Image 1 (cartoon, rainbow over the protein chains, first blue to last red):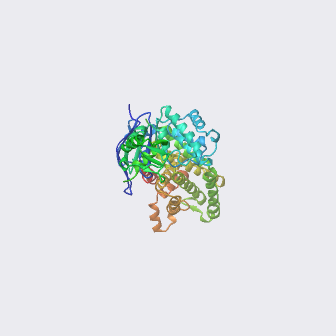
Image 2 (image 1 turned 30 degrees about the vertical axis):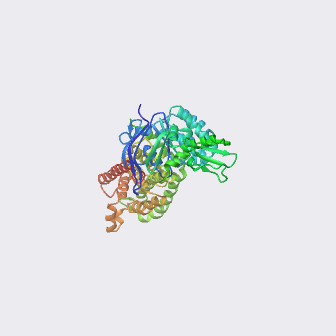
Image 3 (image 1 turned 120 degrees about the horizontal axis):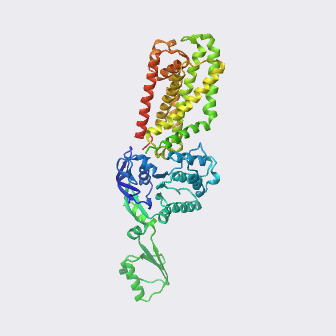
Length: 300
Length: 255
């Protein structure tokens, strides 16, 4: 199957000599929900802006459903919907007119049914005849997403679509994006909300300083880079031998924690059992994608 | 597969943008033209008398119409692009569109030609009410209107790509375009200028555009029609090629 997005050895050096992307290789399969995570300035937006052809690449290959952006730029653009990070709307027109215009740019002369469907799905029907500049921030964000979907793209690129929106709107957008993905649209999402990537994406790429440092499905990333920790609450203070290994104690020494499945954990469990010490409470916590992200993006 | 409907949609968007604010884009030039006509035509016309073989008031009409076309076709493209930059629309509504550079330039410049010729027509209509006239060469008149609007629509397009702010657009309009218009034979024959300035006027593209238009309209001109029309068409073609090349390179709009 032809990948939705194929990137080979992509480099981007800006005029100010900033090397934003360094030999990036990436493949997003058709039908996938893919997320790109990275700290500010890591190169996430540059990467997707090159795919959307709004930023020039310095070298490398970029293909959208097999169409190289060098040889078939218009065909690649027709297959792709793009929402930039910054909200930008045509303030001369109403909400519906903005969508009609955008639909026309993609060659659709009669698309009103789909436009009305998008307006309804994104809770914008009531505001369809209002000028786009009269909308609230959240509504503008939804209209930006509707614009990107107006030509029914096979690949949708969302650059931080939920940045700055309230919790309830974020959840309603997640629902909408998830349904869109279930209907067959390939989605690439960049986000600062790691929870968002963990909830929605099949696979996650973590980018740091213009390089992809990890790319796998969420569970695999957690398995590879995450860890689980245990926490025992003891009924009384117990003097433990140093030979048990690296453990962390609370100030009152009534709580001991450490890495689950480590040698020190095994020794501790054995020692507590051998000496018949009572444990009042046990907690085992898995690391979240956020911890993996922090671990990987932390500079040595 | 060439997306011509997309090009048409962009053209329509550009036309509707100026029609939506018609009072500013069509009403204002109408008032300015009336004022120019009353002040220059009625007050000075009788004193100046005959210019290049025709009454000064009649001589003035094509100049005023050409000036309106020049200013408004320039403003249409330049203001549209700078507004897009200002509103952050250049990414999703310009660079990401599935249109070729040629289609983008064609859509923007065609819309500026519509606005230019609409403004020119309004000015001519008002002028006719004050001073009835007939068109000497109707076909050449239409063609030269389109060429003038295209030249300055293209200059506006390139300026809009270059400009980083509204100030940049005003700079070109005030310090380059306006002097070119005033020394381009809009209000007077360049034969009335001192020798040195006459030489400067010969290198002014506005002179050829206005002279071509004046000949097509009232059958009088200071240079041979073939010379003025060839110069104007050559300038238009050169600017068009330059604009397409610049969009293709993403000059000043694509990082």
